[in-house]
Image (tube, rainbow, N blue to C red; front, side, top):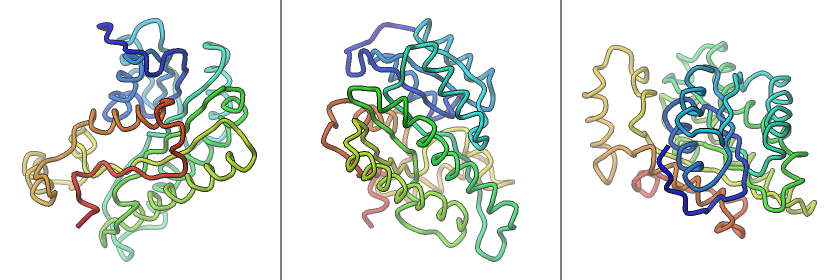
Length: 257
């Protein structure tokens, strides 16, 4: 990978879930460019390995089912053993699907919360001991603009992402009250132009969906993965050392309407 390091994360080690594609990949690459050692985890280990190879020797790829509580313990242990500790956790892995309160099945409801919410709880809890050993640690939880404003056809998704927002504040307060060197914040993207859009509306051509979503945004475009990655970089860095329990909307003004 081309060396563009300016050192905003120099000396830091970061664990990023869902790092094999989309937002996770963008975050991993920018973190590495800024000097971090990066653990790229993904349920698709091959995609995580490709990103890690792109970064080079300062990256480690691990298979990771974020809904598996026991795997979290293993992944954190492997990360610390490989790089000697952990300073940053980015809970990025997630899924999305449409469905109202009437059309969402119990199975879909539980699966959405397992991937988008339970995994964040598992991750924060599993990484806490390692992060406490850092001089300045940060947790960044990827929520969604749907965690700030509701949509009648995203019942399970809105529920899970709103819970991530409030859970992040609870973690931030817990760490502050116990004088842990750990900050916790949430990031709330609107629709970002990644492969996840391919499955949002079954049967709708991707270009038509992108055009439709762009019209709904005040800036008349979708976000780019790097729009989110640079925001996560700021929150993970010591530049944000007094930012704690906050939420950052990366949505082109959508939640301001």
